[in-house]
Amino acid sequence: MGKILTLLFFILISNSIISSAQDCNTYTFTNNAIFTTCVTLPVQNSHLHWNYHPTNGTVDVAFRHTGVSASDWVAWALNVDGAGMVGAQALVALPDTNGSVQAYTSAVTGYGTTLQRSALSFDVPVIRAERDGNGDVIIYGTLVLPGGRTSFNHVWQMGPVSNGAPGAHAMGSENRNSVGTVDFVTGQAGAGGGVGGSLLHRRNTHGVLNAVSWGVMMPMGAMVARYLKVFKVANPAWFYIHVTCQVIAYGVGVAGWATGLKLGSDSEALKYTTHRNIGITLFVFGTLQVFALLLRPKPDHKYRIYWNVYHTSIGYAVISLSIANVFKGLDILDPEKKWKNAYLGVIITLGVIAAILEAFTWFVVLRRKNVEKEQVNGAYGANGYGRHNGHNSTA
Ligand SMILES: *[C@@H]1O[C@H](CO)[C@@H](O)[C@H](O)[C@H]1NC(C)=O
Ligand SMILES: *[C@@H]1O[C@H](CO)[C@@H](O)[C@H](O)[C@H]1NC(C)=O
Image (tube, rainbow, N blue to C red):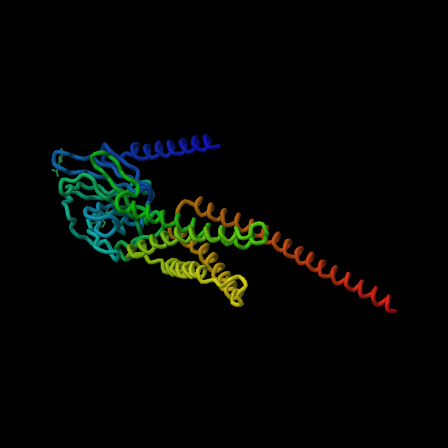
């Protein structure tokens, strides 16, 4: 099985390498320009072609975005001092009403930009853009690379035109992941490299930590408490398993929660308010549960029943909110479909197991009650019989 998967994986990878190489190298530019290096960028059907001139530190680039609608703008940018959108030194292609494409430069200073014309922090002696017959938009530019550097963070984007100016682009995963690094000498382009890449990495770490802790371990820990308790042999083992499971889940969960807070404070442009508020509520509830453990009355204490109700209801609230928030997070992170399906599969499996154990628990509890009732009845019957006998004897 493992070998077959590995084989499939390699077939998949080599296919995508071959197809991207074809996309890159077989394209014929209208003016028959030849670019010696080409990389296919990881998202948004884009390619970057270039010739680097070491003698004067310039690079001739052709950024090609395939399949662009005639009413969309396209941009590609180096971010010299930072990463991502703010600080991007952009080459912009803006469609004209007469069908031609205008090209100009725009230094992006904030998230509210409309990509106004402005000079960049480095010279761009040549810039033009065109739209070919297939709907590929190509921006040609000659850049005088700043500071003798040859390796940069870059971003690329497309969006709709509104009132003759570039309007805000969509916020899908392709739009959020169109960041990376490019090295004009080695010809390497990192998928989501640089600060942007580490952002994606941090978001993934946040997702995995929280999905595993809040989203899987805590429901499992609750199932241990509810369904293991029924077996007399599992007493008090169920308690220690439950506590261990939840304390580990809480530890991992708090780490995941902290990464989420950091992500939230770093994300100026995008606020995921609901996801964040559920996360904070979960942290509060989770912490209450840990304190509840330390403050629980003895099993025979008269307040223990209230504590049980409290602990169980907060516990169920935590589980429901956790699962809901993992799905919310998956919608935000928007990874490949398989991750959402995998989590859904885990939750459904846990749900089915819980349903079976629930039925089994009821069966065991009811049977125990019946047995107890029979014992009581039996005892009463014996008594009654005795009394009856006695009565008889006195009669
Ligand atoms: C840089 O050098 C290349 C050849 O090495 C030349 O073709 C190009 O025109 C030069 N560019 C500038 C802006 O000087
Ligand atoms: C299209 O219009 C722009 C001005 O808005 C002009 O500069 C350009 O030459 C026109 N292109 C064609 C092909 O007519």
